[in-house]
Length: 567
Image (tube, rainbow, N blue to C red; front, top):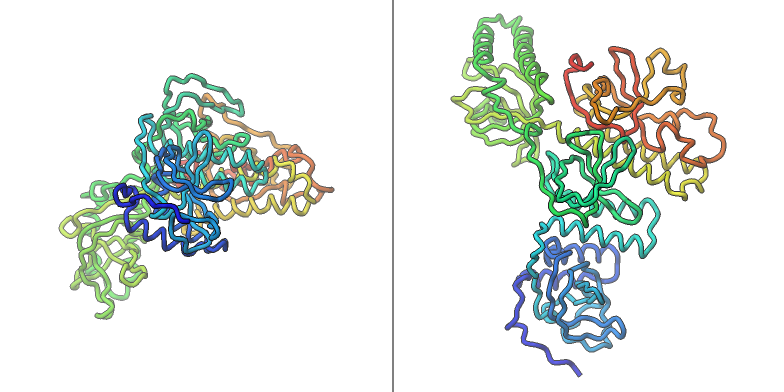
């Protein structure tokens, strides 16, 4: 006998639209117990059910929940915390108050202090879903991260998850939520308690009275079975903050200031002095004999490129991309690539350099850039004449800043994963070749990071570190790195020589790649005193013929500078 159904229309929930319910019903049909299909279906249902907005929030659900005891359905009103959406088996032998058209349906879990309730996500099974107001004053982003931290702690503890790969996946999950916050210029965390690490020493700051911490490169790491937030102190790059999400009251991104900010190129690079020089060179080029034209035009273009390079060298990072609005010269494929003016609004064009172009029998100095052709999906060369009569806006961007910050962040993550691996007792049960394979995998990942930042332009500049070992080049193959003392920064004072000139960067760990004397497997991390199992960076100062050996976790920042300015 089928149970009577309540009047659905009178209390139709507005949290889900009719279109949301249609998408959920369609995705439910894909659930078949097969892993790949289930993943696709659940992803679609999570999007339609606005999981990003409701997970971890207080909700009131009125509808039919499935009993854990006998699988029957009971109409209930439950107030609790919205949790996972997961597949739920439907037994056709059990009477259901809604149409059954599949063996599985997605169900929303609502957690209370006493029980977990599973409500099939079906418009006939749900009378209403209401998102309850939160009066805690805690922002949504903090509440969501708290929920994930609590959930991951529970999963790790209940299932006793200890293997490095599973723990890495769990940490990646909460770091993915953290990355929803745009913290490119850093992040401010308001909290009531935190820890600070300096020189390996950790101090607890309890009852912080709503302290506001300014940090950069935030990421979650493990503390026992709970993920906690760690970030570098912006004011002291050798200090690290550690905050449990239960103590966090607010999180806000810090404005980028100069990092990634746009630069008005008319006011800086292409100023009156440049315009006068460019006009004079273009005019002179008109009188150059054809036999000498190519050589002279290259020479004149180099003069302008030197001007552009001089400006870049005075800034913390070089200009790599430009944005502009106005008329640019574009090759017309229908007219044998003859240059024609075309109005363009471009936000991210890559700079190729200065050159001279001819238009209607007159030469002009132009900035050659590469832009993406949205219609054809290909890139094309465009020539921007830096003239306010033709270009309304011309801005430069420090595009490499984010790339280098991300590279340092990746090196830290890789070092952290490697450290977790060698601190896992399972590592010491492996045979030597498998131990070396594990360490080599992390080394390979770090090598890919360094290769990525050198793919377009070889990295030369500055590498700021908190600790290093140094050998002169003529002793590199004569002295063991184990005999070289570790130089560490005094945490209370910035030491200038720790900003290392970097003419070349390479990933190389002597404890893995230069150990012919290894006998048997590695029994303790103490056998890896140089790296502690982390990938290591070799920094070459070619001018002074010095080599620095640096753990990846000790790299503070990378920047492309004029090498002549680095001590």
